[in-house]
Amino acid sequence: MQEILDKIIAYTDAAHHEQMRRYTPERYIVHPVRVMNTCRAYTADLTVLAAAILHDVLEDTPVTPVELLQFLNTVMTPAEAERTLALVVELTDVYVRDKYPGMSRRERKAKEQDRMSATSADAQTIKYADIMDNCAEIVNHDAHFAPMFLQECRQLLNRMNHGNQDLFHRAMAVVERGLAMVDDQGPQ
Image 1 (cartoon, rainbow, N blue to C red):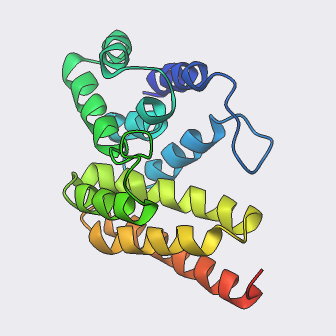
Image 2 (image 1 turned 90 degrees about the vertical axis):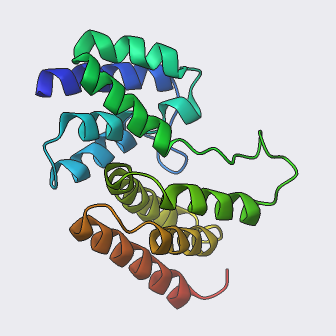
């Protein structure tokens, strides 16, 4: 399984090309690998781990679902490839500013909460790990944006509670700790 995951990591790194993390001088690939490693503590399901690595590819790169499926079919069984793609599609934001320029951020986030509340337990589990990883960076590096982001994460988690319950509670704790930290720092 590790050989397959290593190929998926290499594909994801190439897809994100020269993208860097917003707040740290790291290549983007560190984030999906951390998300996958968090999920790995709760599951050995190859499709979940692969989707955790790929969770931002459709949203943040030019890769299309057809191209992603073609790649996945070279490293997994067709059923695994289809399941992985389905999870990545579930995790890809639909209500983004480019597609919905007339909607406010609050309206887009509310629509995403509705959409994500209906996603599979496995997609929600991956999203918990994604939230945990993003919260840590934002709290430590963007005190101005952190309160809004953390509130959005709390609202999303309150609507999205069908994934792995241990990881759900960890994600909620990370958000609550982050909110307490930014509250302690006061207005910036």
